[in-house]
Length: 121
Image (cartoon, rainbow, N blue to C red; front, side):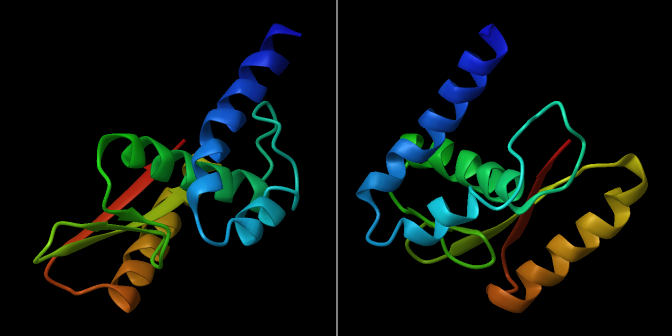
């Protein structure tokens, strides 16, 4: 029961900042697409979007110019923007492919002068 509470609290902290966004529905709907059980090493769109929203919400608490935009998150520093491709890693065997996907996603969407990729295990 304690793990369920901690897990619920983590999800709540992540999605509360969405209430200030103009269109939170697509993100909330994606949270329903698959399992959010952290003890399952099974890939799901719900876990992927939760990780993206977690990174976004933590950045949003520290700075105001953070947006949910492709590649996944954009940090606006006035004259420059940083694109962050958030990728959840489910297996050590897929690290290289996952990072490669993040690089391609970032290259396709953001000014090539500044790029960042975030990932988690």
